[in-house]
Image (cartoon, rainbow, N blue to C red; front, side, top):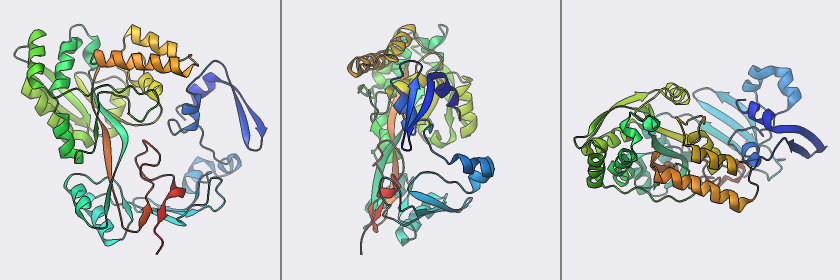
Length: 389
């Protein structure tokens, strides 16, 4: 996969200790090895049967996969459903639910109707008025989980000729956004407003105070920076999915004098453009939360990072220092210092730890929602449980 290069660059050897253990020998200190290998951050530690993959090939494996999890693959009908059956010999414990069926129901209202009829037991991604309806309906439960963080990027802050190079302008943008109203409208106030680009569930997270909504101070800052009449900030790039929230933020920014035009893009095109650093002005980015503060910052705030449009030498230096620090307390202090500098410089405009809102039906005793921290859906599946009749 895409992380194979990193693994090969940093791992010297992999040795078989016994049938249940392997030993990795690293080329140099790598404090985040277990985050890299042992979590869903990369998927590098996923186990598949070598002989089977070699026999059926990649395409054959996609049609009939065999893994090491608590459920066996039964069938998959694209656009319709995925069916799994419990593997009683799973090492952790036998699953409670013996058969899982994942149905594809694209329309939000149709998903909710299926939940209310009892056709399904859990529905994912219900928002707005429909989420309020789940909350009002006897027997149904609305469950919020927080799998992704959302923020605005200022790509031009590293260009001395850009208005965004001035910290006062970036701070003004932060103060212009009414995150509380946005939260109430989009997720019934259940998202976690944040002052950090690092998800609050991560190791080494520093709790930056959320920026208040203060349009009067935002206008004063713009005046001090030489933009008393505001300025044309060009295009605001975002994924199509977040257009409604992008439009709300553009309204807030316009109110203090920062004029922007919404430029929504299809997801694959949008993320390709971010990775290629093709966008300017303002970019609304969100990512699924996996890893820790170090792995997150490396991709977003350090020179050369996957989604970093530039960097600051002192922050880069602190990052390299923490990357080889094996004392956890010292490493945490370095990572906290990096996050404090990011906040003080208003490098980003953090918005929220976004709430995925899911509906749970009356038959469910344990939905698995929220059991895996920042994972956005049910899991571990072997822990999902129906009520006994």
